[in-house]
Length: 78
Image 1 (spheres, rainbow, N blue to C red):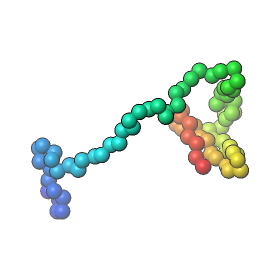
Image 2 (cartoon, rainbow, N blue to C red):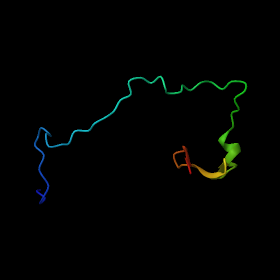
Image 3 (spheres, rainbow, N blue to C red):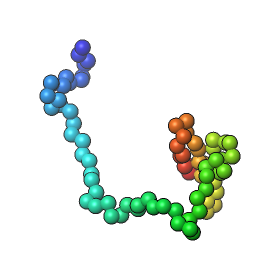
Image 4 (spheres, helix red, strand yellow):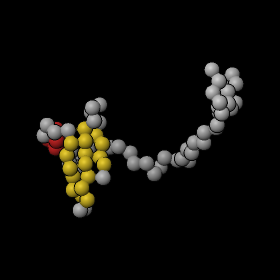
């Protein structure tokens, strides 16, 4: 089906715009995850949320919202 003002793409897909992707030269700046050390505290999310799915966190005078998604992931919003 043809639509006015829409160019049909050939079977080769040549009418598709090219996507530019930047790749870093090195990942040396990325922090590596490491096992917790004796001085690093580990808190259980169940202890923080206490049955709720959303909490508010005040940090440096700003209130943030942390939420558990339906997929069980954490989201932190300002």
